[in-house]
Amino acid sequence: MILIDIRKPLAGSSGEMTLRVKLEIEEKSFIAIAGESGSGKTTLLRILAGLEEAEGHIAVDRETWLNGKKSLPPQKREIGFVFQDYALFENMTILQNLLFVENDKTLAAHLLRLTSLEELSHRYPATLSGGQKQRVALCRAMMKRPKLLLMDEPLSALDPAMRTRLQFDILRLHREFGTTSLMVSHDPSEIYRLADRVVMLDHGRIVRDGTPAEVLLQTSGSQKFSFKGELLDILTRDVIHVAVISIGQQIVEVVLDEAEAKNLTIGDIVTVSTKAFAPVVSK
Image (spheres, rainbow, N blue to C red):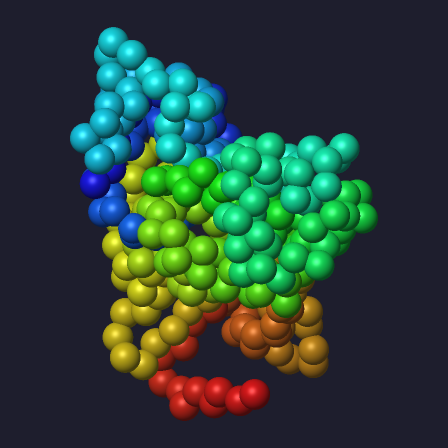
């Protein structure tokens, strides 16, 4: 069990705020930390890692990492940290990057094999693709068999196909090593695929906490779905108005009536929803 009860003043995206998080996390669970930019997600991970100070209490398996008297240094916390920017040693090969953390060649070979990197073990980071670098970073984070794996948007710079590949690698390692994993992510599909619990932060506070379905599914009734997106344009075609909306990685057009068109402004964040429809799912 991981017990977290921390406070830290922050300068957030909309001014001063206090990061105030109180959580109990079950061993071997996979937690996604979600929320708008500036809500305190990365700071929470850095506090858990011992990279930033905070007031309060952190205990992992009854071992105190933080309280009013002490803060355990990062190297004594049993963590693995996967950063967004890989943070690899450019002058070391892939294998050397792993062995720098822990001189365990058997474990290093096993991790490289699990992530299909064994044939690249003597290459240098500069010769690798972004996906390959992130797999190396993930392997390196597992070299100490951490109790707690922290990941700060590790896949955000990758294309969709590579993101999906790496998601399965992350899940495979999480399950095989029995770690407790916390990952910051903005990608709903990624969160739904990986996490068994989602903690949503807003201005430093937990505003939602539940399963991915409970937190992410924007539904209220069996015949309704909705998506949020940005209004890019309103076009007039003969006597109708058409809203051009960016939803995720797609641009869609929605017909508006005159009253709806007058109430909308380019740049608005809007919700597209429907109640009476027969959806078609095709491949």
